[in-house]
Every structure is written in structure tokens, then in C-alpha cells.
Amino acid sequence: MVIIAGFGCLCRAQDRNFTAVRATVDFSKVLRLWDGFGVNYVETAQTPDYSKDAQEYGGFSLLTESDRGKILDMIFGDDGLRPGVVKMFFGPFHQTEPGGAFDHEKTTNWMRYFVRGGLKTTRARGDDLQIFTTLYGPPAYVTKQKFVRGRDLDPDHKYDCAQYIVDWARYLKEQGFPIRYVSLHNEGEDWRRWPASGETANWERGHDYNLFWSPEQVVEFIKILRPLLDRANLEEVGITPGECTNWYRFSAWGYADAIAEDEGALAALGLITSHGFYGGNYGRWFGEHRSVGTDILRARRPDLHAWVTSTSWSKMDADNIKEMHGNIYTAKVNSITPWACIQRPEKWVGGDPNPGTAFRVYEDGTYEVMRGYYVYKQVCRAGQPGMGVAWTAAMDSEVALIAFSSNETDNPDSFIVTNLGKEAKTIAVHVKGSGSRAFEAFRTTDEGERYRAIGSHQLKEDQVLYDAPARSVTTFLGK
Image 1 (cartoon, rainbow, N blue to C red):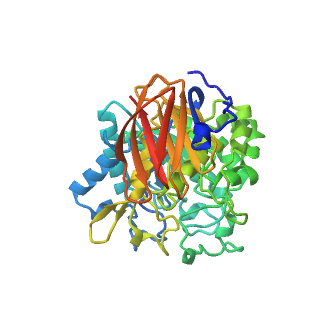
Image 2 (cartoon, one colour; image 1 turned 90 degrees about the horizontal axis):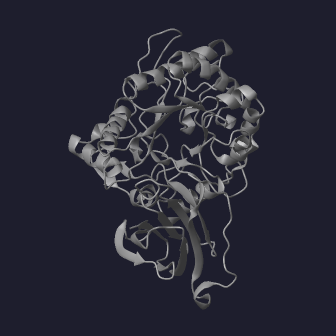
């Protein structure tokens, strides 16, 4: 594979005598390898006492076996999303005391059911999944506060916390799950989620599990975990720096620099990770798509991939694909996994702040396929593992192009055209470097269309002239 970090050029004149948006896709310019899009089944995320409230946020426990099978097929099946990455959380109830027995099954039953079913379907067609697992929150005893969601790690129990991570990874491997990475924390940089004293868990605010992770603690744990994983015969399992809320915090709050400046941590790091939530307004929740932290680390370790390990479904609309575009082309990532792809709203305390999803499960045992499923399918099917992120440009800020080069896989060259505007736009897409002379198109709109097949588009003078409806996302798959 040849990776080219270059810039294409656009003609100075706009297309069709200034009546069409000029856009370009160059499949010969591969910016980086693509590891695939991902999915995340969230089971236990908030309850402070599992014995009193056995939270099951994903909702599979309410569905019939037939309905579970239908959803698994829509996600992992041949005509489904076909993700290449799966996220598996593990929370604070796997162990209750230092040196005590581990129970990795009680709070993860339906998550493991989901992943096992997806793995079976994926492997049946000759593909595979990469699994990363995130410490959602450690046991109460490893915190100074000694309660679930305690803020501060007790230094006397840092190795207990590390072993907690290692034993879960070992269990996953023994159970046949292709565990590839362990991730240190879930938005653990956000120290304002606790009262200043740290004396309460602040459950009334409805937050999910957390432990505060400073940059120094992240650096220390990367170096602690590597030899522990190796001794557990988990040499193939890499370590990530945990998951800040957004890419801005990963760099501006000091995490990337702290790792880059420590030779041991830099050498032991297996993957760069962060959540990819976007917030364009200055303030506490500001979070732009930026590659500064990733660039700092790749300057020292060019081999490092970067994954978005959670991000919003937004309003399950065209804007969500623009967020994907920002993560891919501005944050320069190799994979994106959104927040929970199946949700049971009744089980999220105070209402989920990110309610978009692919499937919604209701308390009467029914479920609904959301528009988010079809919006996500536009990119997920196009960007399969092993493909390459291809160079794109468009001379209209309401138009976003994402492209994936076949990169010697069996997947066709593909590109996605998003019209964020409130009016239809004619877009002239100049296609370079592709062996395909025709592209099969599928479209989802904010109003009505759901991954609808809209026919084949032939290249004429190496160009696709396309009338993109307002607020639409259209995928073109090479033939």
C-alpha cells in the first residue's frame, strides 16, 4: 500500500458555468489505512448498586430471540452495516475486594451475547472483528473514596486496578473474543464531574461511570500494563491512553504531550484513542475535530493508528455525516465507533444526552429501527476494513465528501456525498484513480428516504454529475 499525504488541485473556474459545485475524489491519493467503522453495545453504565438495579441499557433482555436475530443480521449480516470494530465496556462490579474472585459474566451477559452473535455472522462470510475494551469504572475498593464512581485512584491499589484490566482481557481471549486493545478510561479527564471535595459520587446528575485520570496517571498506567499483559500471555493486546471527551481535550489538556515526552509510555502505546464529540461553541463543552495530539504522537511513532471510540449520532441526520467527515479528514482517524447502537431510553438516568442511535428498545418488548441506522449505513458499508481513506475536496462548505479506496481489498472504491444545505445542489464529482467506470448509488435523506437504491451512475469524462437533494447523504459504490 502506498500512502500519499498530498493535496489535489481544483480548477479555478467553477463547474457547469458556475451552476454546479465542483468536487473531486482521487482514489490514487491514499491518506491512511482504514480499520473500519464500529458498534458498541452498552449494558451496565450507571447503576451504583447492581444488586438493587441490574441495569441492562442495550435492551436485548426485553426482546424475543427472533427479534435479536433480526437486529444482529441488520448490523453484522451481508446486507447490514458490516462493522469491523466492536467496543466492549467493563464496569466496577467484576471484583469486590483485593485479591478476590472475578465475576466477568454477571454484568456483561447481553453485551457478550451481542458480540458473540456478531462475531459468528462476520466470520461466516470470511471477515473478522477487532475488539477494544474500555474500563468504564473500577471497583469501589481501588478508589480513595471507597464507593462506586469514586473520583481518585488509591495509590495502594493501582496494581489491583491494573490487574482488574488484565484479567478481563484474559477472560475475553479465553472466551474466543478477538481482543485487540485495552483502553484505560471513559472521559476520565473531566474532573468537574465530581464535587470539589470528591466526597460524593454525584449520581443525581446522571453521569455514567468514571474515575479521574490525569495525564501523569495515564502515562504511569501505560507503562504498568505492558509487562502485566505480557506476563498474562496477552502480548498481542495493545494499550490505548483512554478516551477523552473529544480530540481538543486530548491535546489541549496535556495528554498527548505527556505520552510523547515519556519514552517508556510512547514505546508501550498501541493505539491513539479519544471520543470524537463535536462542540463548535467556545465554552466548557467546546470540542473541535483536530489532529494536534495525534500529530504529536505520530511524529515520534508514525505507525500509530487513531480511533474514535465514541461519538454522537447527533440528530441522526446529514450533519452527523459531516461530523464523521471532520473526524476522518480533520482529526485524521483510522476508525470511528459511535455511542451505543441500540438503546433502552427508560434505563438512562435523567435521559440520555446523546439519544440518537440505530435501534431503540421499548419497555413493552418492541423495538424501532431509527433513521440513525440508515444514516450510519451510508458510511459503514462504504468504509470496510483494509480500505484506504482517499483524498477529497468540494468547493462548497455545505458539501462534504468522504471517500475510501479499495486498496487491493475485495471492496469497491466508494465515495459519500453529503448535502448539508436546505436546498438541492448540483454537484460535479471529478473521479480520479479508480478502476470503476460506474457507481451504484444509495441515498438517505432527513425527510423520508432510507438507504434507497437510486440506480447506477456512469462516469462521463471522468465525472459524476449528481443532483443532491437537500439534507441528503448519498453513497456511490464502484462497480
